[in-house]
Image 1 (cartoon, rainbow, N blue to C red):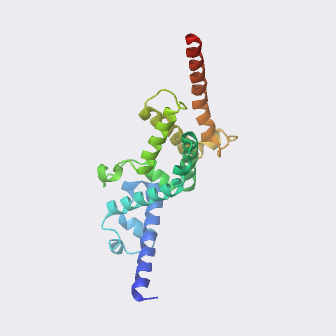
Image 2 (cartoon, rainbow, N blue to C red):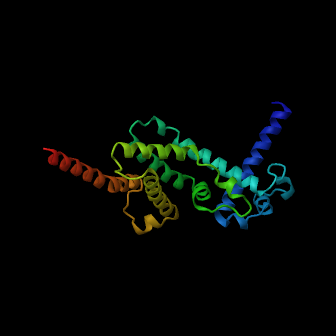
Image 3 (tube, rainbow, N blue to C red):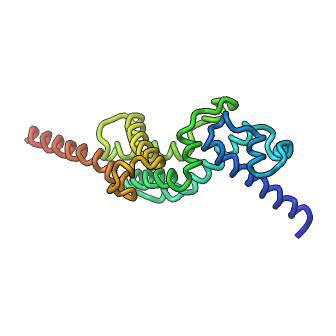
Length: 216
């Protein structure tokens, strides 16, 4: 192994160590209550040395955001292979819940916490991620096939996202399991989705049947 290779490995190792420490501290104490000095202290490192890896706290938190998005995207990478849009929504909901349970710090940073005061909203929020655009298109397909009913795409997206986000947030805090100890966490989103959509499907069937009767 060459000297330059060893240096790169060590650089990458230290960078990831800083990121992991920052992720835990930001999730626990909030963005504004964590300084670069506090992060350095967490890993027994010199505060000045952190600036060899990140020029400031904004760059560090944006790096965290990007890494969280990449991990979430990795969990969702197989969704386009699911042909049925309704099954795609089901699987997407399961992934969202699993992300909240398996990556609680990243879930909190990406979906719960507001924009850090030291970071511009434009940089933090950015443009809608491709995963979200794919979700919106999937919902559009569900509406086109009559699964979700006659509703605007944005309203359907907001309702479905709010539903799974609410479940994930309650599960992440343990409140859902505490108040409903017998709930099936592995299938909860699917059950809620059926509760939301099946009555609509039945209403659509009745509506079509009535239209047919009126014609005959």
